[in-house]
Image (cartoon, rainbow, N blue to C red; front, top):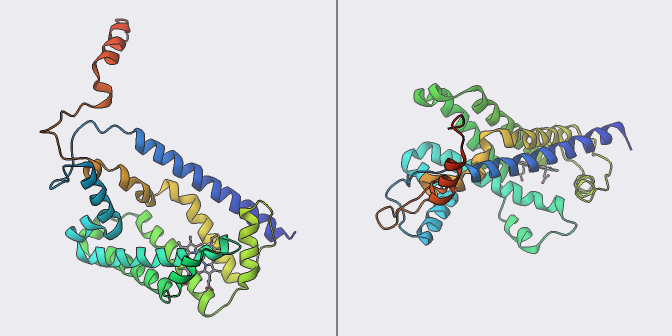
Length: 254
Ligand code: HEM
């Protein structure tokens, strides 16, 4: 096994481990964060089913962004749709024989990478030229867009200009997934693509990309608007336990 392969196998497992554990930890933290008040953003659904519908619109068409800023919505949506289609196409690297429906869907995909890259470039430009967006942008915002654009650009270069042997890519990926490492492809553009991807995996749990999981925990979106029908009691406000804890406290603790 070459030095290059050894390096990338270790890099892959570190990246995947940080990503999975980091993601789960952040979700666990989101889940445990108290939501002591009813703060559903109105007009809000008044039933559980309505909340599910609201979430579907939020995740599927970014409804609140659409209502608040159409330009950011347009480019943000382009980026996410492009990303979604490009990632669907990547499934073929992870399965010895991919599910038929994915092969079917991806026959419609021609411009995924381009749409993704264009959306990212425009989001970057907006951050530079729109005063109020520039004012609240920090270095992380720019670097993240550059990282994602770098992944999309190298993917597109591989696809259109500097072909990589996809059979060796698939062998390498399947080797990682099945804990039976295989040789790393040696094409430079692929090495850059995958290096950036692993960097993204490592950075993901620490970054604002966690909004992908966090959106489901947003109280302004996931609460039912029923404070008039049902009294909202925050979890630690339940009487018996808290009274017990309080009565067990010594004067010092109190
Ligand atoms: C283990 C992970 C990955 C591997 C092995 C991989 C590999 C590849 C390869 C070999 C191509 C060229 C495809 C072709 O020639 O048809 C490609 C394209 C591409 N990749 Fe990745 N990639 C990975 C992860 C990602 C991720 C996480 C992203 C996005 C954040 C991404 C974005 C893209 C894009 C946008 C293209 C252009 C594809 C197109 O337009 O069809 N890749 N990738």
